[in-house]
Length: 441
Image (cartoon, rainbow, N blue to C red; front, side):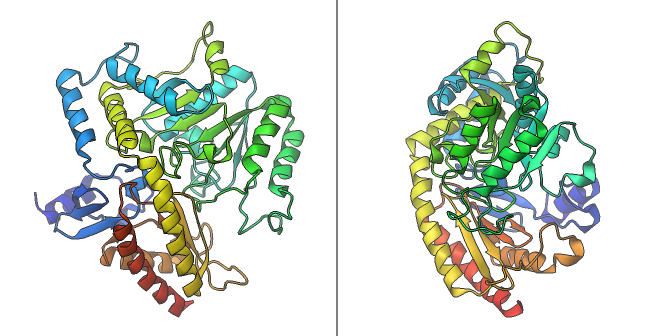
């Protein structure tokens, strides 16, 4: 099927995610290898987005592809109540890399379902119903997960689930309290303590956080924040849920981002990098204390495709690749190189207000003025005000770079297998586009 026919049929029959359907002009994907892919016309793109920040092992990793083929020959599917080898192996492997006593797993098909079930488990275990979540967050598109999200994709589909309370973020560059770290004495943490008291801790089951905020700007919290949040949860008998759907599996240079602060949550949700996106799979990891609760009580959760054999076999192979190719350490090392290059871009361009990141999880924040920090495109800007973002994205694609451009952020979240030379190639093109932005702001 040729390029035009594929696109014609796609536009005739496919509803695209988060899009005004009549404006769609989809790139026609053909194949990929490592950190590069090609469209149906043969144009090469450097994948600076790892697709949706999930393709950690890169396109078409032979080890993972072979595992899928091998498992398909043995068993494509079975009911979730059965034990089978890929699921058992995956549980053992995950238990070795999750922190603390988080060694029991409920399998889902993705991150949103993982967060839905983390909410459900928290409420069942604690007997409380409220969940605290942050404003600059995204936890998924299903009703519970989108209610947790502070992301602007939430209001259009409200009302959501009851019992969710939002709190402010540890966003030092745009501090909600007008303070500077460390002189601020972590006012963002004191704010959460105040909200807990207003809401009554006896009603709060859990606090859910992305340890490093993903699609809302790659916000790395200041030292002491995650540790302080753990202390608050312990003080008030509240569970701490770490949403590692995007930040897990080496993305930040650790197996899980929360490990940078040596904190163990009560629950971890995961997906994306669990299979590197090759097949759908998510998981909820729970502590041994929570797991024991369900030894003699019903777990009111279930999915037809929970623990799917093909997906679990894919995850087993993916985890083996992480270990054998030392991709976690590689991401940490390449992350240092990336941040050095990004800092250089910041120094040379008037439009770059801040660069942020940890590992291969980074963003460039674009501003009209470095002193006022006025963004090039405002948070939650609508279609009519997105001309600059769209032009940046168009120029990136035209130059062979596939990256996420959202409002005033350019994200740099490539596959963990990307080379330093490929990073330099992509950043060279970003450099040219920042020169264009300098000229219009």
